[in-house]
Structures are given as structure tokens and as C-alpha cells.
Amino acid sequence: MSGAYARKAVNRFVTDMRRQKDEDFLYELRPDMADDAINFAERLRIPDLGGRRLELLPWHKFVYYNLFGWVHKLDPKRRRFRSGYVEVARKNSKTTSLLFPMVLYDFKRTPAAESFFVSKDLQQAAKSYTELRNIFVESFNVDRDTAITEGYGIKTKDNCFVQFFSSDTRSTDGYKNSLSVVDEFHAYESDRIVTAFKYGGRARVNNLVLIITSAGTNISGPCYAENEKARKVLNGLLTDDTYFAIVYAYDDGDDWKDPANLAKANPSLGAILRPEILENDLNDALITPSHQADFKAKTCGIWQNDASNWIPVQKWDTGTRNTRAEPAEFAGQRCFAALDLSSVSDFTAYTRCFERDGKFFLFHRFYVPAEQVSEKYRVENIGIRDWIDRGIVTATPGPTVDYGFIIEDIKRDNERFDIIELAYDKWQSNRLIDSLEGFLPKTLLVQYDQSLRQMSNPSKGFERLVLEDKIIDGNPVMKWMVSNAVIRPDANGNIKPLKENKSSTRKIDGVITSIMAIDRCMANAGGGGTADIKDILRLFD
Image (cartoon, rainbow, N blue to C red):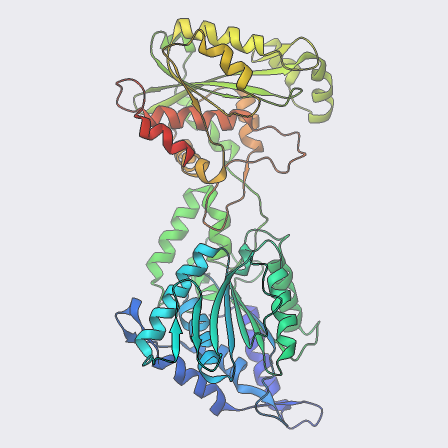
């Protein structure tokens, strides 16, 4: 089963074969040149495969036939395609079967070759280079005229070289690249390095800049624009005979939940990818909302907005429906608190967490400046007046949040509960924390890192607890905040709750403090006082 844009790429190939006899069509297919590149690739020994030779699949060979088989009629040494775009789901052997062989083929076959590949970050680029270097050493007799370095690349005495870059490398303008492969372009913030290679390649009559990527979760990025260009070329809306494109993806209207569609975005299914692996990933996405955007993009080829709703609001309080609790029930018990201070005119959140029978009971206090209440009611259309009347939100006098009210509430809680830890974000907190230290001598005040990387595992743990009905929280303000939270996974799958955009008035402060409080509670699981100092220092890794 193939998707529409894979079929369109094949139809373009077949149509162009028929056009070879047309005088105004400048190109011809040379199967022997494509076979040479394919045979080269399949002679490579892959250490990760136990030293076995590479075996290309039909879809890999189709890409080779296009990029290396099509040449100019009057000069077979000049390739037709100077740029290309291959979009296919992850784990279909993009890097091992396309990137590595093509870079090495150019390095071995092109005079004065400048063969490059680019990864999202330097760490990934270095890792990929190590794999490429190992393939090179395993596959060829390396002579003394070839220098192989750990952090630079491979270079021969006659000035052919392979070099790697990261997406933020700035020193690419002086190169005259013969072949450049850009890996996982969906994770790049700009097309600067692609543009630099396209301009640098102009000094060559036969250069190629190839993008190999999966779909992504940011339709405002440069890769989505490249995807649109590829589709226009395949649809015949844009004519560019020097641009190769193929997109393996679900078609519009396909049900992403139907495993029968997996083959459309995964042409290696059954040969490299085992169906049960993808079906397990599908089941995980069905029960874990935060994984759905990533699954749709990376496994189905369905582009996503960079933000997706996180926790379904209808799921948020299912645990609370069967379990009710009041703070008085936890008098004298261990408490883990968290504080997220707002800008002076916005919500401040203070959360207390108690664990009982494997469930986490959350209680909140929210604070807003009294002079901002009318504006919030008008602009945000929320029930803030009712929340204030019910004592759920405290309106402090004046135009800014009066931290004295927060201090008094924490003092009262300190008398009622055994506050083991209070986690806080360091932003704007120094004065308040200095005040708290005086009357919380037995409480560990933990400065909590709210970076994406550090918040990711606690956020995923919070989501899991919600889906397992292990969070008990009947606060209506919190329900509103949960409905506002979105996620934007980074290239490594890290997540944390975010507002839809920086200027949004839809707040999520209580979600943040809940994650902080539960994380510190779980870190201290088993009793016995505060966490080990190593566990505290983990927050600052």
C-alpha cells in the first residue's frame, strides 16, 4: 500500500522516462550509473548489523535511481537533480541506507570531493560521524594517504574529505560542497545551512543538496515549507526538473488509528520495521495524549502544529469523581508544597500535595491583584468573580500580588501539616523565600529548575498519573488551567506544559506547581524525611 505522494513520485519517474525522446526534455536515465551507486552501497559493511553488507530495499533503490541515474543528455557526468527532498517515517533506515552510502559514494567517486552531512545538534552529528567512520573502516582498506580524525572527518591526500556539521554551524560559507545531506530537517529552526550549501554548491557543476527527514510538529518551521514545495512539484503545480521529491505519508482523510495505513508512511515495514513494534507505538499513542502528535508526525507522516492539547479536560477529574477529600483530613501528615510566583499583575499558584494509598491529593491557593479582577473577567471570560466569592482565589489589595497573603497562608499550613519540602521557581522569589526561611526551619526549600529538559520526566509522570486516575483534585481553577496547557515536544521528545503562546491570557500556573509538588513527593517516597542531597542536585543537572 502506498500513499498518494509516493505514487506521484513514481508516476513522475515513469512520465519522464517517456519524455526522454522529446527534444525539449534535457535529461536521460542511465541505469548503469544508478546501478554503480547501488552496488557501492550494498558493498558497505555495517558494524551495527554485525558487519553484514547493506541490503537496500526497493524504495531505497528508487531514490538512488532518481538521484544518480538521471543525467544531462549532452553531458552524462552532470546529474539532473541538484536538490532533493525525501520524507519518510523514522526507523525506515534513512540514515544507514541513504545518508551514509551517498556521502561515502561521493567521497570515493568525486574528484576533490567535499562531502558533508548535517544533523540537528553537534552531539547527534558526532554520533552519526562515528557510525559513518566505522562503516568506512569496516568496508575499505584504509591507506596511509587517508586521515581519519575523531572530531573532524575523513580526508585524503588529494583533498577529498567528509565533514559533519550541526544545524547551528555558522562557518559553512567557504565550502564548495559536492554533496550535502541534511538529516531530520524537521527539527531545524531555520534553513540557513541549507541555503549556504545550495549557494556553495554553485561552484560545482554536479553538486547535490539532499534533505532526508520525517514529518515534524512545527508547521511554522523551514521543513514544512520544504514539504509544501515537494508536494507542489509532485502535484505539477510547480515545475522544477532539477528538484527530486518523494513523500511517504498517510493521505488526507486516513484514520491515524487504523494500523492498516502504517505501510503508507513506512515503506520498510515488514523488512526492517516489525509491524508489532509500530502497533505497540500506536497503542501507546492511543492511551497517552502527549505522545499522539509525535506518533502522527514521526510514524504516520502527518504534520502537526507545534502545540497540541495535552490532557483531555474530560479525563482530568475522572479520579476525583470517585474520591473526595478535604485538607483537614491530612492534618499532621507529610506535605510537599510548590510555589510559582507570577508577574506582579497575574496569577500566583501555591499547591500542596499529599500521598495516600498510591494516589496524590492536590489542594491549591491562587492569588490575583484585586485591581486586575475586572480586566481578567472581561478579557478572559472566566469565572474569576465566583472563584473569589467561594474563597478559591484570593484577591489581594492593590494593583500587584501582595506576597504577605501567601506568607500567612504558608504559616498556617505549617502549623497544620508536616511540610517536608517547598519547591519554588527562583524567578522573582528571593524576597519571599528569605521571609519563609525564618519560620520554616524544618522544611527544605528546593529551588526547582523549570527548564524543558528537567521538567520532561516529571511532566510525563504527571500525565501518567492523570490517565491512571491517581490524581485527586476538585479545584475548578485547576481544571481551567489544565484545559489551557499544551505541549511542544522537542527533537528528543522532551515535554513540559506551556501556554498556547507567550501573550496568551490562558494560565497554567497550577499545572506547573502540581507537577513540582508531585515530583518532590515521589522523590521522597518511602518516608524518612527529606530526599538525599544527590536527588536535590539532580534538579540542577
